[in-house]
Image (tube, rainbow, N blue to C red; front, side, top):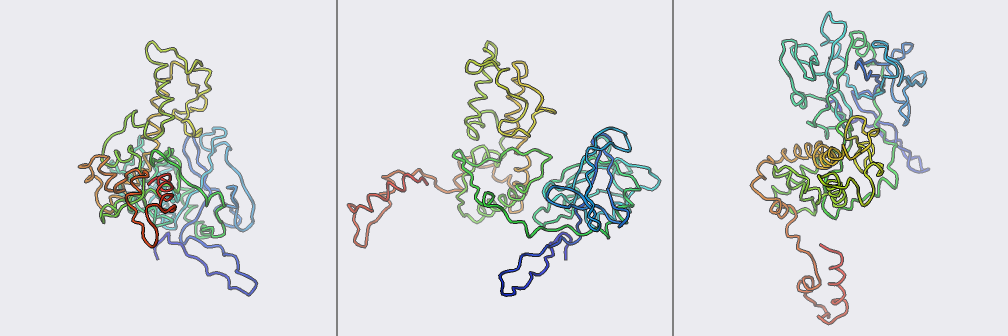
Length: 430
């Protein structure tokens, strides 16, 4: 059975008192382990319980770490780093570590080295990790590049196919590069203790809330990806990959989809770059506001928006509607002024149309390319491509609907239901 495939325990039998609750299931060959990474020197440590020779795993939904045997909960985030002595720099992380990667980390650690700067690869969705290596040794992080001992530069794409994921749906997803400093002591500890660490639970008992089940998207201007930060893994990437496969298969089989993609997204599909004016078809309200801001900071502008000084608007360098999406490092603490207003407008546009949608479109394209290469769509215009995807999207009006009706079975053109139906359908839209 392939690593990463979910192995589910059988359900408890029904004893006549009702269906027994679902039992916990485990992900074969994977361990969800607690990791500390220094934000200053990037040194990684794997907290463990030496008494029971096991690494720490997730205790509950609040991300606390514990030994699965003694149940001692530990919180070490924010502590000083023992290596660089910086205060409050340890970041808590959760990794999905496979048995194979744990063994390879120890076996491929360069002999005689006290520590190495490495570039870890991690799936942004299932959080599984890959310690890339070549020439029987881990690669070294040199200036942000993965380099072999002989000096050959390796690339993230080289390791997508060999990375083991928790779920097959993540196969060939772009991987996040995480700079880490590894020591032989920590590598040996992982290889020694991983066999005693319980496998990750799949969480069958977790049921979505009613609010999570009843979520709808209202996009009168067409569907376009909501901004997503590069360092934020999300289940949405799996959906975009599936969506790419779906659209590609529908086009190949000449099947129409009731999928109103935004004109800007269609332009991306045919290889065209987006510009500021395309924002009008994605978020008209944001576009109008940015136009006013551009006018305010233009030569001869008033430096005011609707009579209010720019400094009094309370804007900071974050994406409107997404307070955690910083447009510049430390953007939450940077106020927007007349001086940096042009930079703000440009950054918002770039985040809305390019950077914030880059991951989603990348996996959408990867899914599409599994059916046939998306580059073949470049012969179409955006309007022609929409016609191939959705078919004729003629707006419905009363006369159009009425001309399509053929009353029968006792009904005629003067029957009240026949008069009501076109008005009702015309109000619903296509």
